[in-house]
Every structure is written in C-alpha cells, then in structure tokens.
Image 1 (cartoon, one colour):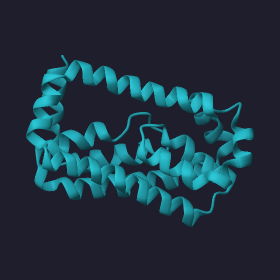
Image 2: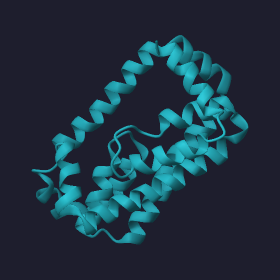
Image 3: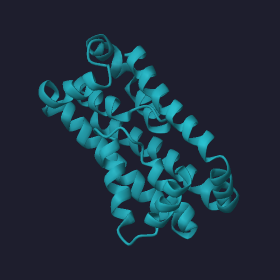
Image 4: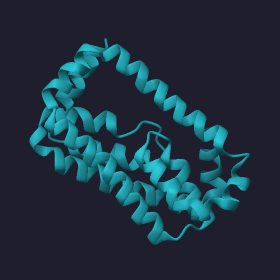
Length: 193
C-alpha cells in the first residue's frame, strides 16, 4: 500500500497544479495543519530535480506566509481560535508560564520550530500572543524555513535517484520513523510547554 501511495504521490508531484498544492500545505502547516510540507516537497523534487530551487522557494514563502497567519491568530483571535489550536496540541494549560519568558528566547524558538518537525503553528501563535517583534519573527522564519527547505531540496537534487531508490526500498521503516518523529515533536511541545 505504501508503494502505491508513493507512486501516486510521485505522479501527483508532476501535476500542473502541484505547486499550488505545495503552497497550500506549506501555508496551512505553519498556522493550523499538522502535516509538514516535506511530504509534498520531497516527491515533487524527486519528480523533477531541475525545479528543486523553485519548489524550495515556494515552500519557504508559503510557510512564512502561513506563519504570519499563525502570528495573526495569536494577536487577533487567541481567545477563540488560538487557544483551541494550542489545546488541541496539549499546550494550552502551560501556555501562560511559557509566554512569560517566550520573548527573551523567541528567536531561538522560531529557529527550532522552523528547522525541525516540531509543530510550528504552536510557535507562530505564541509569537503573536506574546508580542514577539514582528521583524524578528519574520527574519527568524525566513532564515530557518529557508535553511530547512533549501537544504532538503539541495540534498534531493544532488542525490535524487539514490535517495529515491532508498525511499522505495525502506519505505515501511521510513514511514514508521516519520510518524515517530512527528509524534515525538507533538509530545515534546506538550511536555516543554
């Protein structure tokens, strides 16, 4: 089943609307959606490695825009939307304690969230709620997300076919590892916050 899903995703990655799908997933992940954009970016770059830089730029720009939406949720709609999202990720109760020292370390949090599979929407909303300076938030988001997506695209562009073969060979183990890392990120946010 995973092999069919991978083959389907590779075919979808070559679709004429695939860039819009990448942008939508990247935007949504930074503000409310739990699935990271890497699951769309990787097959798209593998399907056409010559577009790696364009795809990384789309992913970065849409992710930063989604981060700004998360920031706006924190500023404008924390009591209604933001609190519900934080509660969903188990970060609601300890959020007040966390927000007391967030601004002192906000840039570091943005970097960690941008570079890892931690649920970045928790940090984008937190940035808005705590009033992290918008230029600091934007700069941290652009740099961290840019590093992540451009490094991923570069590795896939350089080592594309061997990585594709590796993914196809070890698909089951990689799926388990991906889910474990994703769940670990949610657990870390829950226990740290």
